[in-house]
Figure 1: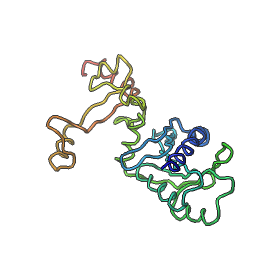
Figure 2: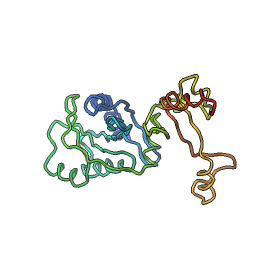
Figure 3: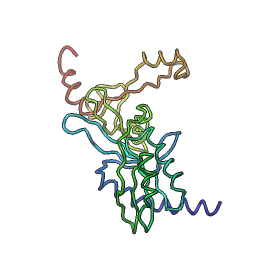
Figure 4: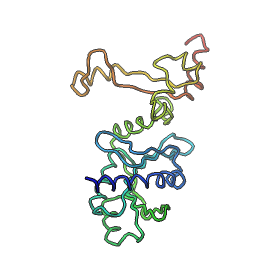
Length: 232
């Protein structure tokens, strides 16, 4: 038990190095440590913009951090499992020697990226392929990091922060959102009732889980214009 605990602490010591490197290398605008869903939590999560001028799409990058002492195929399999919620998955391994040809072949066969940690420096040795994760898992992961998808423009935006996820939103209060320059959270009762009827999302009567978001930009540029008209 003592050895496993110390090994975990040594891995945690590498987190800042990997996290800072991801911000620079992948241009991640948001990173988080030990975040995920009940199905699994990656050591480091990074989010970056990939949509270009005509889209607000983002890419989710999950990294598993090891110290070169775990069986490589086992660590690689664990890393691959993150593709259910992330677009790219990486194994970051601390080592003084390069990855062997066998290890490169295993990683390539499974479809994971490799990052070498050496002397507090990271190097991307093998790029991760792009995965299309299960959408509901990906959206739930992003929400855990304080990001939501706008139902009007389709862009991802800061709905809050990791400690207070919905801090930048009002609850179905349009005029308050306009005045405070916030986004809006609302609930789709029709979809919720359908899922409840089919047993897909059973919940106590009156509780609706089907939450949706509208970004502050659309509130300002679109909804506020409607509120100023007589037809609103």
